[in-house]
Length: 311
Image (cartoon, rainbow, N blue to C red):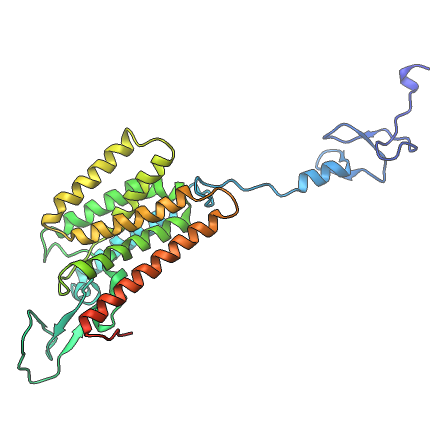
């Protein structure tokens, strides 16, 4: 008997003669086994193989991969819009800037120094110690108007250039959620260190704390990849140099606070175990930093207010 007359049978039902092959694996399938495909037919195994969920690719730290740094663009836009709002309404700085505690007279004028004040009306405390906790974050999105401070325009320009250059890289390495958390916690860390170490009545604004946190993450992630030389090394060196130089005319406490918090969170992101515990370690570190910052701020406010913590 020649090969032309050899009967072909279904690979699952050897007793059933058939003449149709699976377009993927080329095995013969009978009418009961064949499944419709865009071209020809497929066997049940190939159909099941094709419907298996594909494991989604992840970033270096386990985040979802994205090709567009949306969070960086949003943060950049928020800072610029806030700056434009300050140009129109300069009073926004006084209301939302980072201030630890400041005594305000009946006419709304801040009273400097301590001692006894003779006032025809009641005095009140303003700032975080006065229950305005939102200042810990809102101050990180404000920059002074160039009409009030000649450094204002330079300040926002430097911050936005660094955010644009580093933020887009760090966000793609971390993923959107982790990057957003790192930015906000770095901003909070900068404000809390200002609250603890700076003059309580000092008015502070700027995204520098958050930007320094992003810079710390940039260094940690590149070190994790073994690529701290070259561009990464130059950026990091420049950032540290700016931390030292800017101490003479800006809030070094905010810069240092953002750097420390951003660096600590980035270390947890980059070096957490690459197994089922990674998400828990990263989330736990973030939650721990939040608790630490909140408790530190509450203790300082209690000290400023003589034992009470306004809510």
